[in-house]
Length: 224
Ligand code: 5RP
Image (cartoon, rainbow, N blue to C red; front, side):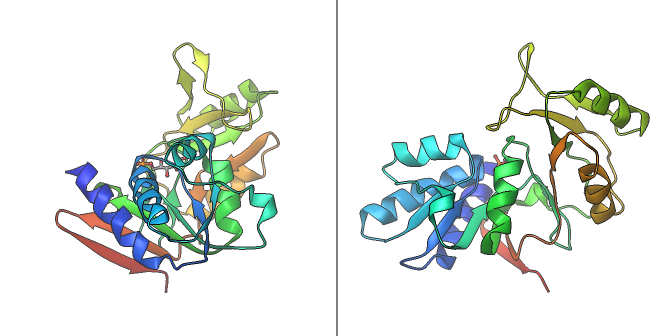
């Protein structure tokens, strides 16, 4: 059911794409459906310039015949479509479950419009049940871990097997289990100011539109 909701949201987002646009492609299993559909449309003649938010998406897109342009070589990004891990009624969210938060935030910040595509389980009253990813440089990261532990944020270093997970930029991720984030803007600012933190997976005031896949339909929420 969740996969079907992801598919519905991804298909709906295609309606926002116009011929000639430069489009930012997010990362994750919901974006997989978007990229697959876009590949079909591009083969049928849709003209798009695409930039990617991760090695994973670049590999997927190229494998399906979509050309990826370096983000530094485009003048503007008209629209970025991405997934999210949690979204609240203010359209603030947690992202980075797939580890691509840094490039996703940079791409979103450079985009004229940002759409998130999610299944209905991700729409929540309060952010924080999903572990909040914090991307940190490896140098001194044990000290950041200690600091997060002492702050009561229940940190966990993201691992792949026994090794620390590394992002596309070669950084580590510390996931924080905060459960209830009362003020996501305050928390984002607090964490981002800590030396060694590269990015935090709180995406405040970034999404313009959120498309929620529901059982057999979609719901569209717009930032007011
Ligand atoms: C990757 C992300 C993804 O957008 C987020 O994890 C959602 O993924 P999925 O669509 O697979 O549920 O932020 O860094």
